[in-house]
Image (tube, rainbow, N blue to C red; front, side, top):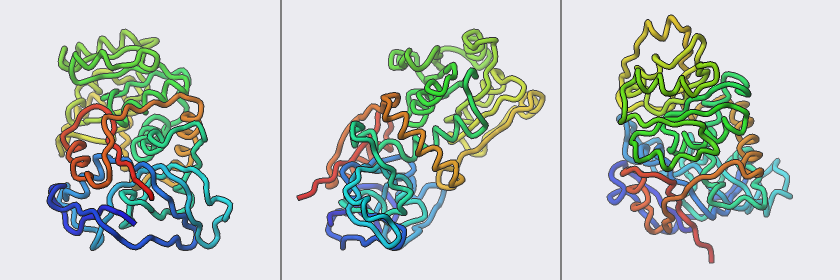
Length: 331
């Protein structure tokens, strides 16, 4: 099979290789996927780059965890009728050496989720890490029907899905963007009101958000940069607000401790590789259902062939709106 891999960490153009590797064989409880589209996430490029001093977890790594494709073969204990089933894949390179940047990948059967016939492969390849993280951020602390959810970075890959899931579940959704010019990209059918963080300080932004929240209360905050937004989060929080944070720009992140404490704020930290299995199964179910009903939309910035995977990783590292995908060709 054609595959991309690295055997040392470093810049994409220096360490990523593309060539032929043996086709993988599914073991007990596993399925093999004929990959059509592989999604590139920031976590994939951080692993490749040795982020936070991480070491090579395996001698050779095929990167990327998310994909869409077709079940090609089944291992012992898996219903053989799954062969030929369209699926979306998550966690392929989570605690495993070989991900989805290849014509074929092998995953535990539960990590290949049936993809409805009318849902495209591009969307399927975007549901894994960002979708499950978004679901956990929104729903980990109970139902949100009638609640108000603030999503920071509402145009990002996790933030946009969190906003769509929250609206789908009956919440009033508020959002933030970094720049005033980004407000035009916010979908008013999903986000009731958004503010640009370059236009005001934390107190002013908090007042603007509270003014649009029913009853002036914000119940959940989905946080993309805890270090940058801690003061705003403290200013907007109510008694019992939950802040679900999946990223921070600076580490360690300073927190306004007493402001948060007096509001009995819960800080939930989200590490996507280690979510509880039951939570992941629920997320996969809900993401598939929401996608099937047309609730979820994910903008794609660019597609790259496998041979240009280094450019794809560089595009993720430089940032920008919309997902980066790799398309896999099969003869």
